[in-house]
Image (cartoon, rainbow, N blue to C red):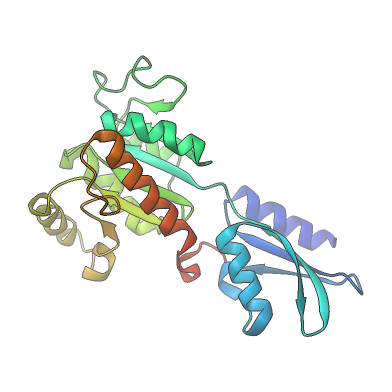
Length: 233
């Protein structure tokens, strides 16, 4: 591997940007691609599939044997609100391979006893996210029902381009939320990215079932995301 390619690859991984290293198995030449600069044709299709699946593979393109070594940042979930849904979601997310952080300034809810072995931050989202910023490979889940806690991270998620943005609440609650965020300058297109009511419509009733619906919607958003929204440069 060329030194400049190695430096670019390492920088992308450090900055949580997706990148693919494509090697020609016959002549040893190689190229780097980001999510945004995948070419047209068979190679582009293979690259897009690799970016969405996160899986490296050997491919055949126009009679050439290539190996696509894709590096996709580990997806993570940031949950705003240490509620019952969050307890179930924390367990399920780990099984599905997601890193998960729960943020809630309400110390009566955000306790180690309720969230054992979970990355729990008992602080305001503005402070917590300043330390661990959101990015394009983060799903933001807001479940406190409190605008003073939920609105800021929702706005940050839209600005950052999180691959999933979801918020708990009734349609009436969400309509008021949209009005508040609209007053902050977000367009209707941007606001339409917020999944609300949160989760796939599976008739979920209990906190655990709602967590299943949320996680399923997050996985769907990750695997079907638009690569144009990536953070690659």
